[in-house]
Length: 373
Image 1 (cartoon, rainbow, N blue to C red):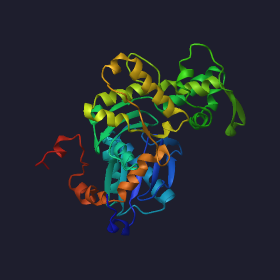
Image 2 (image 1 turned 180 degrees about the vertical axis):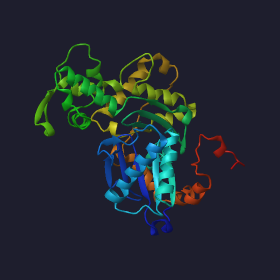
Image 3 (image 1 turned 90 degrees about the horizontal axis):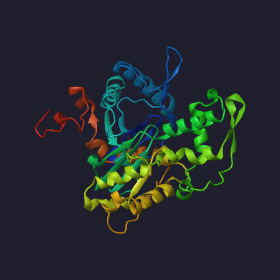
Image 4 (image 1 turned 90 degrees about the vertical axis):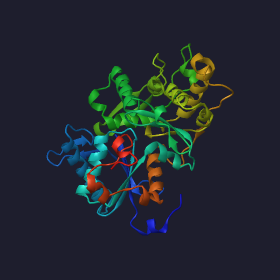
């Protein structure tokens, strides 16, 4: 896609990727987000810290979004949003109420010029300059798998599951409580830090070994806020990520999600997807994940009759490596889109929004009629 001079002569569009745990923010055509902040806000009335998407009514969500966006614009980015163009990276199966409320806050309260909604899985592939791939996004609250072929998302083959970083945190907490650690010490930031600093994905051979093996060494972890030191057992370090690979009759582990998504696509695109798997998301930034996932996939093809009868020929799973960190790959794709002519041709303008106060949606039949309004 060409980079038009007229696009870059204006103020660069603001690119936002608002996730359940973290929000990535920055400007179009930049290689990295300016900042990655928790998706939470401090209530002005009580001073309490609250998750952004923890709400009861739509009006409450609107007020929280306004406060959160004000913090982004005037504290972190230090720019005025008025008459600015925006690129919002979103899950294509995200909640419509959040999408509509976010657009209302931007257009009605902040008077922005236009908003371009881009799907996270598709834009992630744009960072590799390829148009075909199987995008696996391991996020905080869920793991999603979306096949993309020739720049088109195959939404009928979309798969998701509730395991993500939050489930890993819960498993770490459960195992530490069983060793006698006080629950008050195990806050969400502490659990996340333990996961990042000490945990890893073990190999397939160790995971399936029938004989007991020597566990990795335990490590001492210091909790600075409480001047406490806790022991992280070696068994915990290599076992918490096993929930991604647990076998069940539901066939809902991560390797099964990948294979089922490929099977739900047409036969002529399956080999292309097998050879172009792209794993993104903050939950994928753990040592040993790609090697374990590849081993699990190859094992299922060889030993599971269900898949052996449906996949034919010699198949080798191949993975793309992200050009940046996996946790902001989707944001980077949005930054690339904001630097092209898509920001001019595909954005929802303020005038178009004020005409109906509605964001066009692919799932809405009225928005997709050839002659409809």
